[in-house]
Image (cartoon, rainbow, N blue to C red; front, top):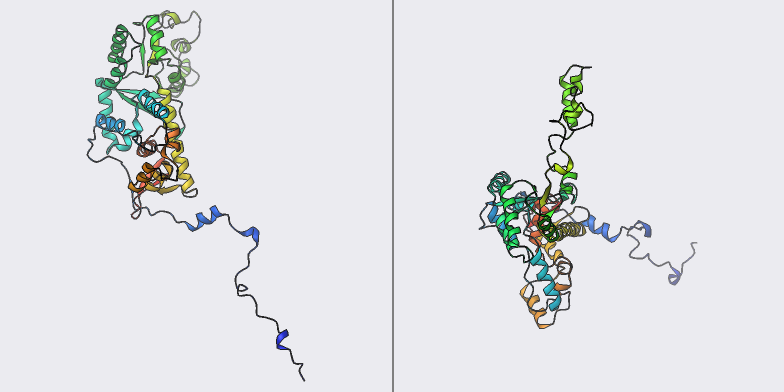
Length: 386
């Protein structure tokens, strides 16, 4: 006879959560990895090759002036988060920056890169635009490359400089007009006092940076390994011609033997014409601002999407502006003093970048090859790091 079981002592049913899969505590993914796994890539319906602004002519001068006119955001009238001293500092910084625009920036706004390069070469030859070569800043796609300045704005900057005498300006303008496409100019027409003044004010610099970067064409008397290589591939093996000829070293400026004739021997250093590079004051501040803003925007994009390095452009812009909303309701709250978030003047965009516009930095990144734009088809324009 089976033994009866008291109903009060019967085992209770299992927990309602017993059917769920058990996981070890160490096997859980981090919040960032889980977010990346749950997120999906933006739809890419086609690349956007140009950021050409509507209503702006596609000639180089019009694009250059458009970039200069749309570089900075207006300082908020109220609730900016900056006192009068800081506002004055921001305005002074903007005023002293040179009117340099990178060629990559103009290419980003141009509908045809070929036409832009052709037009730029013509303007340089005519003396209306001057190119500024900036080596040694960044690597690969992050390099700045060449910049351009309107000669009219260059001369106007010098006319407004009270530290220059009129005769010095005349000599300087004559050098600019005589060498419109050369990065360096001879300074034999300038006195020592003129040179000291121009160098101290930042209108002349040493060309050592350019020559060390290999951007200037070497003189005809400089040794060339390429000539020796060509001689070895065209002349008979074992002959003097295979190594450049009997006077190969001396014909290329080397050696000090009597085998070198007087016509082929290079001039003494004190008789060679001296060269210096034309420049604009505060160019270093411009380069620092350009490199740091591009790096910061790229870092923000990687923060939004560490895996895919892409985001909607409006979301990236909001991140650049420090998540300070600029809609009418938010601006009204800041004006009434009811805003509880971060004020615009306390964000990095104003503290370190003096109110530089998001579109300006984005165009620089696209033109330099750091980022690319594409159409998402749903959330507007997308930005992706290359």
